[in-house]
Each structure stands twice: as structure tokens, then as C-alpha cells.
Length: 267
Image (cartoon, rainbow, N blue to C red; front, top):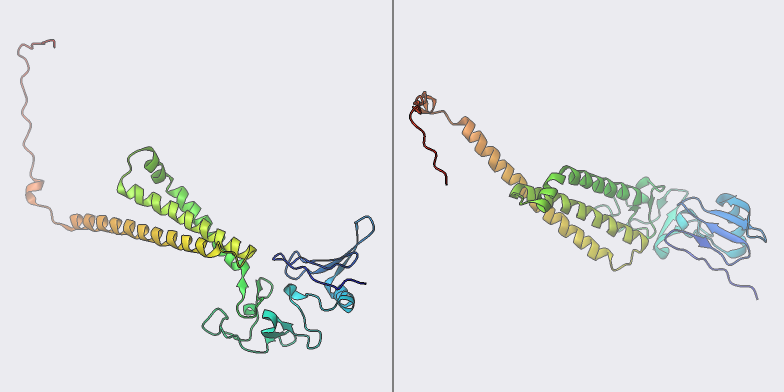
């Protein structure tokens, strides 16, 4: 009795079928290919999606296509979110509006897919797109900037650990370390969410990142306020008119006669 075909799908969009020598690999969002192996488990052929999908679909039913989503063989539409919303690839738009538009995560255009950038973004549920590339760039740039800030504040950090640091050095070191900790925690939360969206560690990591960010912002505000107070005091002193008495010639020093005898007493 032949086995019923089934599909294996992971977060990496690697798809497999229990049929002899067929393997569908999807290392990137739009690079679904069919690999055929020989008896020695060597790759015999590699067929692009456009040519392979028709042959495989006739034998094993509907297979994932673009971005690993299922295509309705009757209408030719993508049924995202388990059929919640249908996307028409011919019109390049959804058939129904997004309930999260226009003021939510769905974007201004309630019928657009991935904000007009389906290569760098995915929208598995049809409600909101996930901008993986831009989010990664933002987090990476933030961590890099915070690392540079930590390098610039390394003298303050060394002062905290090697000697008794003043208040300004303590604030500068705390801001630099807190900024790096917040950036790393945000990056960790993003990575965990990409690997396992339902992970229980996503929210705690996000909460820790928010706590680091708020405390760092508070310390930075205190540092700016202290610098502003010092600058205002300096400006007031410069603007204050000088007293003529302060400009008077100081009295001449009187010479001391030391020509007399000198006694040296040993202790």
C-alpha cells in the first residue's frame, strides 16, 4: 500500500517528501528546488522550481510554492493564515482588506502584500509582514553604535574598577554598559523570536531590554543635566563684570634678611 504524501516544514523552510529520491530544499525564500539522488546518494539532477513543481504536484498534490506557502490549485490564489486571507498573484494584491490597516501593523495599504517588498519580507498569516532584513540591520547598527560608545567611555569604565571614580565617570560608565546590555538583549529577543515565535523567552527578554533602555535613558538624562548645570554656571561667571578691586596691583613682597646666624638642631 503506497504511503500518503506529507510535507515537513521548519522555520528554515526546508521541505521534504517521503517519496523515493525527491527532496525539496528551500535555503532562501524563493529558491525552492527539486533534487534527485541516485543509488549512491549522490545528487543526480537539480531542477528549478518552475519546471519541477508541475511534475511533483501531479503526483503528490499541492506543494508549497513562493515563501513556502500553499497554492490553491483551483483558484491559483495563496491562502495565507490557514485560509484567512487569499492573495491573488495575478493582481498582486489580497482579495480582502487587512483588519490591521491602516493604522496598525498592516500598513497604509490594506490590500498590499509585504508592503510592496516580498523579497525581503514575509507575511505568513496575511495580517502583518515581518521585515526581517531591516530589523536585523537596525539591531546590528544599534549594537555596533553601543559598542563604539563603550569604547569611547572605556576610561570611565576603567576608573570605576581601578580607583574611586567621580560621579561623572560613574554615570558615563553606567550609560555605556547599559546601552550595550540593552542592545544585546534586544538582539537575543529577536533571534529567539525568529527561531521559535511561540517561545516563552521572547517576552522576558523584551522586558529586560526595555528595563535596560529606560534605566540607560534616565542615567543619560542625569548626565546631560549635570553638564548643563556646570555649563550655565561657567557662562554666568564669564558674564559677571569684574570688580576693580580684583584688578588692583597686589602688594609687593617684602624681602627677609637671613644673614644672621643659623642654628641647626638635630631631632
